Image (cartoon, rainbow, N blue to C red; front, side, top):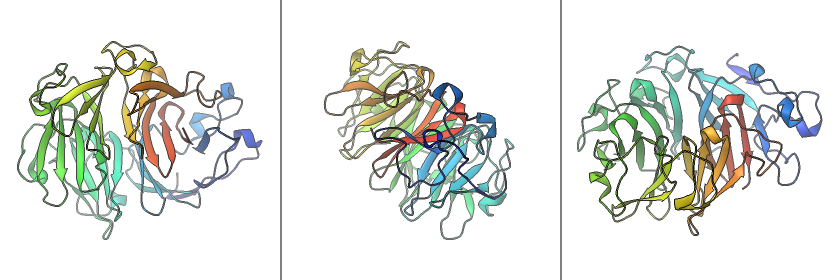
Length: 356
């Protein structure tokens, strides 16, 4: 992959189009669009995941210009996909290392990135998971630094500056709706941490460091968590927490209490009322403008939606739902952007989008 690779349209029928731009017409009304990649043979296409310019993509987010940032877990690279359909290799060399702070993103390396978040002014935050930290790329200077975290695993720093705090497997990071708080799923510490981007201070907002199922109605910061993988806050102040091993979606309410809203705690695949629904090792989530929660249900190869009003869980892609052609393989990222749900189909080395 060169540093400026254009994603070109192969000579294929429209139904297996390899999209060269984020701003494109749907394949068919109501169908899923393929942003990077194509339809697999079993889906009626000829896409070979080995031909993808991406290797194990995990997370995406967008800047205010509509450009998409992409981070890879195993590939170890950061890409930018612009509105003209050009894929830029922005950073990372594929190694599992930790270098580059104080210099440009192009010279930095990473270890097991899970996702990223972009502020309105263009600052890029990257969950550098196995380096136990978050890396920040300053939009004005292009310089990368480590904040929050030190690069050493541990648990320390609450109430103090995020740059001096320690974490243990930073799995997912998201900005709150006002873009002034960065939430962090601190996996091995069984906590959700929050960094105030104005003051630079870090606090714990859920989890007490012990592993277990929280009791409904208890204070979130005094409650155990099983394995918080992803976190996102909605417009009403609810903090949604997804647990892979817990096979559950939990919510920290604005009053600071926690409750389980979906999932039985047992691995399975069942749609329906939240507390009777089942998940299969879900990995990531996001929230739309109506505060509905979308879940990348990894081992069920499906995208699920939790309706914030009815508390019903439905499958919207995969398992024959949504675009019936699409067969996902380890979907590991979901991002809501401008009315579209973007799905990182990691096992197929591609990125899709749909209008639920």
